[in-house]
Amino acid sequence: MSFGDNLHKELEFQDIQIKELSQKTGISKNTLDKYLSGAKSQPNVENAVKIAQALGVTVEYLVLGENTAKTEQKDPIQNSLSRLTPREREIVSELVRIILSKKN
Image 1 (tube, rainbow, N blue to C red):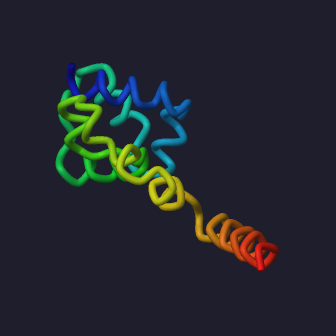
Image 2 (tube, rainbow, N blue to C red):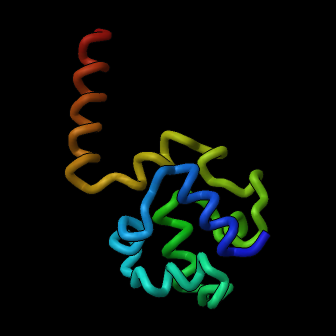
């Protein structure tokens, strides 16, 4: 499978639209569409890293399509937290503090 195929599969799996990925990465929607269509099959390293980080996967996974390379499988909680905005992380931290305080 190509980078575009793997990217499409991951976007579909995570239910993320191209517009949302564009906003998260700063890569234009037009460029992302080219990666997906195969018109521009491989992004430069910088864009590949941005895309992988936004999706919580490795560049290797997007290039090779190997499931074992997905960072989500390594640490799903850390992976999820890394994708939150600073405000969302504050809210999660507060919820964890509340939960832990009720245990004592």
